[in-house]
Image (cartoon, rainbow, N blue to C red; front, side, top):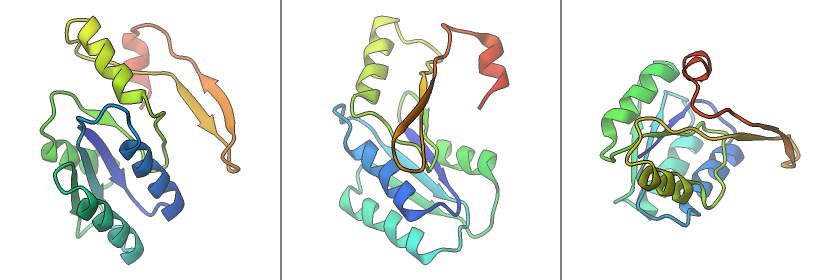
Length: 146
């Protein structure tokens, strides 16, 4: 289950984030999206269009008040039915094989409790920027960053 809290994001960024989920080579995903009262009909229409496109895998919740990211994420987790939760920000993009790699590691490591990955930052022009390489399992990292 991919958790996607949304709040007043540029439509292009949100579309890229959701399209990157639809482009996954691994197809057994669900996308749980909570709009945290963006007060944007354009965002609502975009989310509804994805839900209409794939109602079995896309779940949306349009909140009537702003709860902020923690509560919105927890609402999305409550919508999830998968064995694992993946967090996606509304301006993130996944590589097409991202979920496949996660599932591969779940199967290799006998169902781990936590997985995380490196990050690549993309500049405003859409070009790759720096890569944030994360260490092997680190409780300090896990407790100190989002």
